[in-house]
Every structure is written in structure tokens, then in C-alpha cells.
Length: 361
Ligand code: XIL
Image 1 (cartoon, protein in one colour):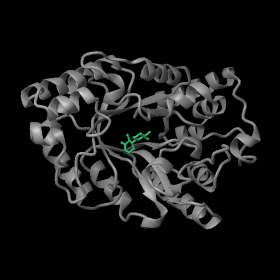
Image 2 (cartoon, protein in one colour; image 1 turned 90 degrees about the vertical axis):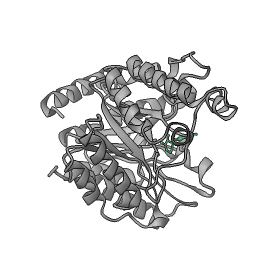
Image 3 (cartoon, helix red, strand yellow; image 1 turned 30 degrees about the vertical axis):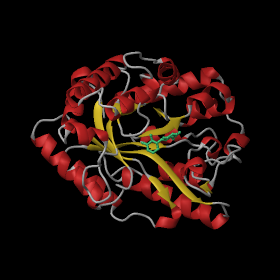
Image 4 (cartoon, protein in one colour; image 1 turned 180 degrees about the vertical axis):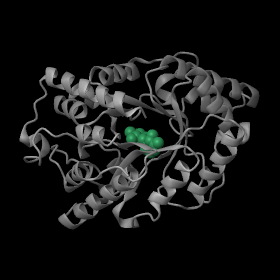
């Protein structure tokens, strides 16, 4: 990352925010924050780290407080849903970029970078595609063309506006074998290299990432990514980064060897990023659980700060108000940095203090 121009961009962004008049009230942080006026993005810029959040675009349109905090606290945004295949190509060949473009415009207005999420996944695919594959009306050769057209069209649409793209999402199982998705079944394992090549051809500036969960530490799944990265890069496939989602649960125990995992990808000359961090707990939350959660956030961030090539740290939403967790994991929640009223939780303070006090190695 070119740190000087990055810093210039960051201070220009700060100026934009001041013009917008988004003055923080103490309550927006749930109490007076240490270091008045300090925001996560200002602190992260000094560390040459992008600090990001996933954005729920419906909340962005309807909730002023959400919009203000998204702009104030973060210098990178990821579309939580609106860049996924079912959202951008609901009918075959009919693209709808409205919601995604609105987010990109918001980001540009606020001096924020955009992470692209995601080009190829087994979830949130449009019905025309999954049905066509299931009923045989889309055969393997055609599916490959459909994938190529989708990746090329989407990458070209956002060309030059997205700094990191999650090209393939969740392609390995826990045991390190390739997930038996329709992509693997119909196209065979070469679909992964194809996806990266097509993405790179359409937007050569974007850094192209793998992305998955349960790959924070060194385990069979993260090692499968490592081995694949070695092989693809040896073959000249443009794979630039390893995205670690970071959906943790305080009940599972903190993964071991997180920093060593980042270091081995850095050793290949690759970037890494935490892309979807949230740390859930069994409800109700209490002080001990929130303290444990804060410590887990701090440890993930600490690992990233310790490895130069870890270039962005993105949370999967910053408020419990709009979290996907309660809808997905029965009885769990409170996974984000702020509560449903936007009060800062211990996790917010831990992230802020870590960014303020630590120095990049
Ligand atoms: C989730 C969104 O947060 C939800 O709103 C949606 O209903 C399902 O997808 N891994 C990913 C993300 O890569 O795209 C997922 O996002 C969470 C898990």
C-alpha cells in the first residue's frame, strides 16, 4: 500500500466529514470516548490499515445515525448483500446495479474504499441459475460461459472503484477438500483459477482474494487455501490475498496461531485481510461475556497489526441493531462493536485502544 497517498486520501476524507457536519454526540459512542473526536478510521490510517464495515444498504437509506457512524468510523465498506449474484443479476442477462452503485457513491463521497463481495459463492445465487442447472437446461459448458460473463460484467462495472475483491467465497470444507458445490460438480476444480483470471482481465488493479470462515488459525481448511495459493501463484494465476471472515463465537475458544497463519501467506507475497469480523455469544449478554468478546476482537486486530501485509480489518456490521447473527444462530447475538442503541461496547473500546496504542511491526 502506498502509505503517503493513503494518508493524504484519509485526511481529505476527514475534511469531507467535517463539511458534512457529522459532529459526534457523546451518546453516539455510548459515553464520552477516550480522545474526543478520535475515530477508528483516523487511528487506523496512522497504522496504514483500512478499517471497514459491512453495510446494510436498507439501514443506510433509512437510519441517519447508522449512516453518520458508517461514514465517521470507517474508511472501507463492504456490501453485506447487494453485490451478491442474486442481487445484481436477478434475471439472466438483466443486471441491477442500483443498490450497489448507491453504496459506492456513498463511499466515494466519504473518502472510503470499497471491498467487493463476492463474485462466486454457493449461496445467494439467482433462481434462474440454480434451477437451470438442476433441470439440465444450463449444461456444464454453458455454466462456464455464464460464470465468465457474470465475473467479467461485474468486474468491469466497478472497474477502478474497488480495491479488494472476494473472488471466490467458501470453496473449501473443514477437512480441506473442495466443497461439493454446483461449481465443483459441473465445472471441476479449474473453476477457481478461471474465476481469478477472468476477474483480473476485467479489472487489473483490484487485489483478488479468497474468502472463508474457520480459517483464522492454522488448520486443514486454511492449509488447503495455503497449498492452493502456492500452486496457483506458481502457475501465474492472479491470486493476491487471503480473506479471513472472522465469524467467531466466544464459546468456541480463540483460534490458535492466527498471526502465524497470516505470516505464512505474507511469506508468499500475499496480502491478508479480516473481512467479516463479528463475535457472537449466547444471549443474554453479560459483563463477563462482553469482556471476553472484547478480548477476542483485540486479539484478531493485534494479529493483523503485527503483519504488514494484513491490509484491512472489516467488521460484519458495527451495531447489534442490524446483525445477521440472531436470524442465523439460534439464541445468539450481541456480536458487534456497538449495541442496538449504538452505545459503544467493551469491544469498541478494545478496538479503538488497540488502534491507538499499538504500532505496526
Ligand atoms: C450474510 C448476510 O449478513 C445476511 O444478511 C444474508 O442473509 C446471508 O449472508 N459469510 C459471507 C457473507 O461471506 O456473505 C454472509 O452474509 C455471512 C457469512
